[in-house]
Image 1: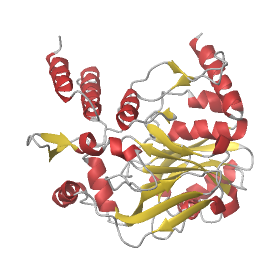
Image 2 (image 1 turned 60 degrees about the vertical axis):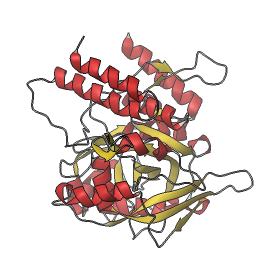
Image 3 (image 1 turned 90 degrees about the horizontal axis):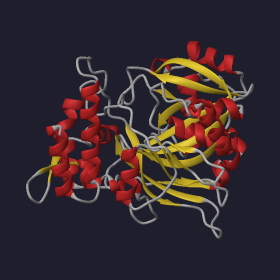
Image 4 (image 1 turned 120 degrees about the vertical axis):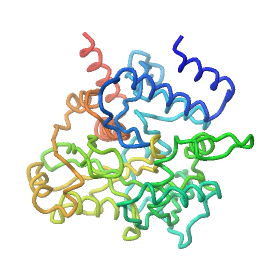
Length: 389
């Protein structure tokens, strides 16, 4: 038996339960990848390991009593274990877990989400604060420290209160970037004085947003916007190798960290579109819907998945990005794909390119929004069967 895997097995037996299993699985995945890639130079970002593709299992999603209506589930194994440790069962694709989704994925408008922004930051645990103080200068030599937001409570809509309630508090980019970069490094002391990872101690808590409790890790709010053009094309973009997270990954369509300029999520989405794709594109608040709230495994960021309809053709959008976008440098290249059920289903099943952790979650939710859940899953299964033959 491989001595590395044997050692991992002993450690897993000692840990036994809880979020510690996640770190063991990550260790095995990294070692297996190192064995496969032996002799090749590493291309992953330190600590984030964004180039590592998670292993997958060929499960099925069943719709009601109709077993014949199925589709492949593409949750990574580590995300599955993460949800089990947190005690939740939710829609998960790759490394993205949905916390709350809109009814039939039709989305919430700006008037249906009540956002309250607190003035004072929430105190993080002392051990995490010590990590930030010790490591931030080593990790952020060239990084600025902007003012971002974290979610401190989330109340989903109920029949007697149809709007969703979200409370935010300030958080520095320094805190989030430092902690997220060290999630899987043994930097915290357990009661036995043994060093453990941040994810082992606090990872499962990151999925338990509620009305009264907030996660301990100060994860920032990432507004993730899927964009459909006036000629019914979905915009795909490849992230630059200059960005802090997931360099060179393909995304659908752009991401923007919420900051103190934004009063709500739609404001943040509009700002992101203007900064990354150009200021003169024709899009307004009413053209944007918030489809769901999710959390990413690699950084534990809180993702607000939006769908925006821009009243410009895909060629006009790509031209605007090339020539007028202030933050053009954050993206390498663009592609476009028809929003037909067949094309989007094929895109969802594509695993060859390096995806952003929530990119395929966005593809699936766009499909749900346009075609409905049942029709989408049937189409995905048909494409999957066709590809396997």
